[in-house]
Amino acid sequence: MNSRERFRETMRYGAPDRVPYFEEGIRDDVLRVWRRQGLKRRSDFEAIFRHDRREEIHPDLEPLPRLKRWPSGRKGLDRLRRRLNPEDSRRLPRSWNRQAEELNRRDHVVMLHVHRGLFLSMGVEGWGRFAEVAELLGTDPAAVRDCLMTQGEFAARLAERVLRDVRVDAAVFSEPVAGNTGPLVSPKMYRDVVLPGYDPLLDLLKGRGIEAIIFVSWANPRLLIPAIIERGFNCLWAYEVNPQEMDYRDLRRQFGRDLRLIGGIDLDVLRQDKDAIRREVEEKVPALLADGGYIPMLDGRVRVDIPFDNYIYYKSLLEKLI
Image (tube, rainbow, N blue to C red; front, side, top):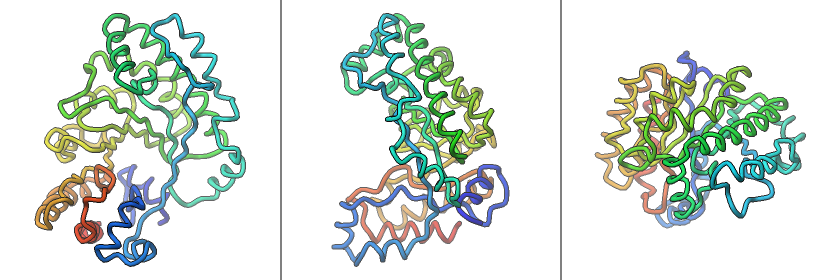
């Protein structure tokens, strides 16, 4: 099987020859440190470990031109809407036609990023705007819902533009909405205020036959999972999680096959010893692989404080299990 077939078969709870080896990519600063710990050349690293290639399409979902002042209610909504033109040529790469042709000849996985989530879609880039949006959620949630619906309708039209040219394997919603203790909005508010704005995209993706609709989040969004499954999401990819609250084994027991899973291996154990790494991998991965619909990965990107020897040990264990 090629990478694309392997991914699709895994997401269908089918019978792939193996699940994909996905890798976030090792940054140059990490490789420089690892060279002092025994890695000779980048090519040596790439030769040691196999991986399945995946590519991501990132259309520009920001208002164009950029907003200096985001709406603080319905008053600024028309101004925002005028800057969300899905046909703006700047939203896709200048070489898009050529890239689309190449992507349609591929045998690797392509994922389309379709949404930036509640807070980024409301212009939150710092504490001041976060406080403003939090207050707005309490005093005028309908205004937030209208703003998110405007963003969702725009994102759906932009995604449709991409999907006219390229058949993708998964759609990705990025949703940085939680801290370690839980989501920053209640499940009810998320269901009533936020998720309606995602419906235009979800309807489009289902109509286009996109099978994997991935909810990417951080820390501990567990209380929101029932609502996203009800809405049509069918895969969770969680980063930098609270390991007690977001243990993938517990999530699989609770949500079963309604929720495919990517990730789930605690990056922090790679900062410990080999026994801790072995326990983490061997206690979690085999059972999840046996259930299907699971792609094992670290729940964060490798940093310079991860020893090269520990990483080699982790990857070797994972390859044996896969």
